[in-house]
Image (cartoon, rainbow, N blue to C red):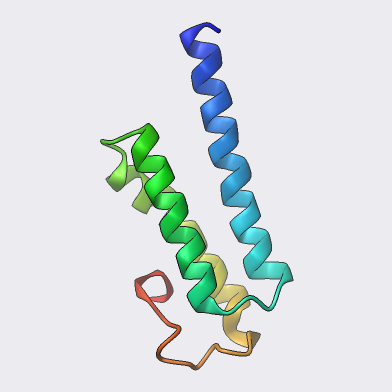
Length: 90
């Protein structure tokens, strides 16, 4: 596989994982703590593929997840649970 094709496959996989997490936020009653774990696992996977990408991850994905949680997560059963809240929710 050519380097550009492999990069495209990797980027598509990251996009699918981000979409899966968004679906967890929007369409499940998974507790925030579990969503936070999914986000942390996703961040680690991104950094394994792109070690210098922490800042980019925070700008693109973390802000996206935070915005979606702010906008759509208010009705979650644990929305007011301080233990379940994290930096992703601030």
